Length: 93
View (tube, rainbow, N blue to C red):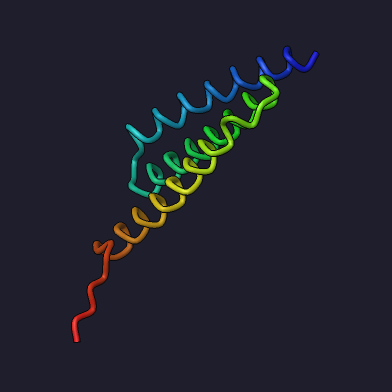
C-alpha cells in the first residue's frame, strides 16, 4: 500500500516539476519565474524525502539539506536583484 501511494505521489510531483519548469521558461514576469524556481526546489526536497521513506534510508538527507540551502540563497539573491539590481552591497567608507 505504501509503495503504491509513494509511486502515485512521486508521479504527481514529477508532473508538478514539469509544470513549474514551463512556468519558469515562459512566465509572463520575473516574479512568476522566481516563484516557479523556488517551488521546484521545494518539490525536489519533498521528492527526495519520499524516496528516503520508500528506500528506508537516510542516505539522501544531506542532499535534501544542500538543495534547501541553495534554493533559499538563490531565492534571496534573485529577489534582491529584482528589487534593486544589486546582489552584493559593497559599502566603502
